[in-house]
Amino acid sequence: MRHRFPLWLTLVPLFVAVGGYWWLWSGYRDTLRVELARVLPGKAVTIGGFPYRLEATVEMPARASHAADIDARASAGRAVLNRGPWQSDLTILRAIEPRIAARIPALSASGLSIAAPSSETSIHLDGDGSVARLSTVFTRARVDFALLGAPLSAESLEVHVRETPGRSSEPWSPTLPERAQVVLAGQGVRIASGAPLTLAADLRVTGAARLTDYAHWVEQGSVLVRGLTLADQAGEVLRLDATLVASGGVPHATGTILTVCPASVRAAFAAAPRVSEQRLRLPVKLALGGVPGAWTLGGLPEAPRAVRAQQPPCPALR
Image (cartoon, rainbow, N blue to C red; front, side, top):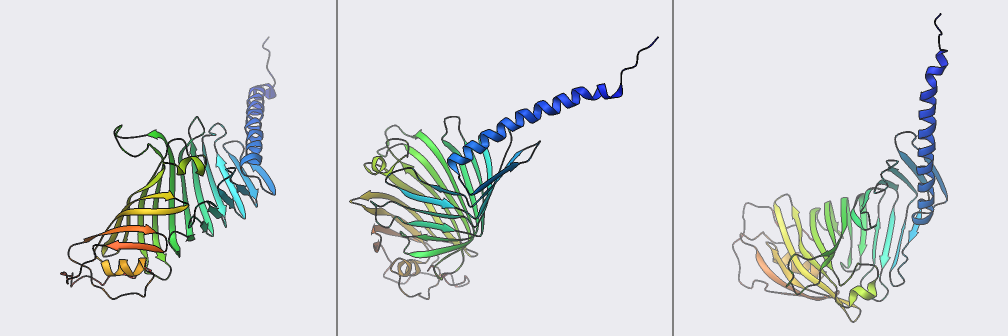
């Protein structure tokens, strides 16, 4: 005589599997809650997303730098984080009304602040905790940077950061190994009331050791600007290549600017009134030097140069 199993017994493996996964997912959820309390504390934290992801909502998150000689703070009205339950090395963070402010008290003209209605950040960490890639896109950002001496706004501003521990392409190079790379990309970028421009920049930070504080970096470290360009619809307006070092608590810059609008560049650096200028047929190279508020430009053409008559005039840079 045949024995029939009750139908509900066929569901037992499913219940066991779901219960086991819930137990596993809950462990990842609790780990994330502890991590958020440490790195991104807020007024309230809720975590959901079962079964495919971990989604945490943090109300009024705020974070301050732990370095004694760097005053840096980040906050937002709300932050929503997403990650795979077993992908702790990759996190996507969406923030409402993000605010970032940083300065180095021992260094003049080091103040930086960024504010935007919203931002989206992807954080990818290496196994040792270093930043493999941190990419943030700010929408309608406002940037105040003391080194510029004027506010900057952008319809879209991308900031990509990664650590490059001990990276050095040539052992004989006189500069120290690269420790970090910062790549910038902006659309609709305006310096003060200047014309909207497209921004692209590649910055490399060198140092004797990993970038954990200012005191150890400033002894021999530098910032290498390997191409900062501003362009409009008619083409590239300027390209800046420079080296920045801190000496005596003041940032010093030396480098060159390649531009088809030398008079406009001079007016922008001098914070002078806008000038009317046609683009040159061939770019000229200017020598840049000095400190914030006292920049010097050498190599400005004295004799008239051939201009691009069919091209629009140079944009206002500031």
